[in-house]
Image (cartoon, rainbow, N blue to C red; front, top):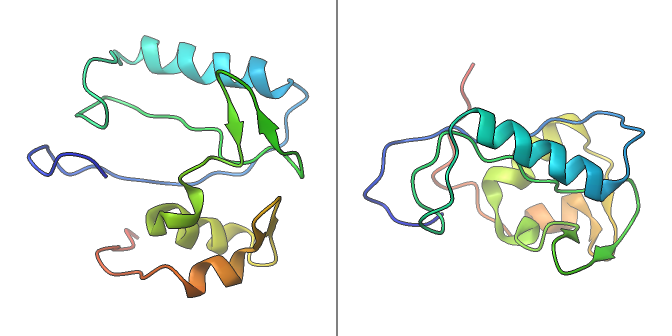
Length: 114
């Protein structure tokens, strides 16, 4: 995503349980980013860390500062394929089964790091 004239970077997906509400979780992610030196100067530009809240259970959330499922999720192979690795039976709220999203999204350019 974004400008091609930037260093290579790694994308990963993690699943976990949280008792925080989604907005509090987003703020926690942003705090972690800032502590790691993240500054928001150029959209999709080089960054030290980028944490996105992709899903929050089966909720669909649309507010000024948070959209869940993440709006880019259905087009981003670098998200869909690792998400499949951890939850192959997942049904993405409002979008359908993950396997159907994968059928419309090429894995070209994705490389698994072992």
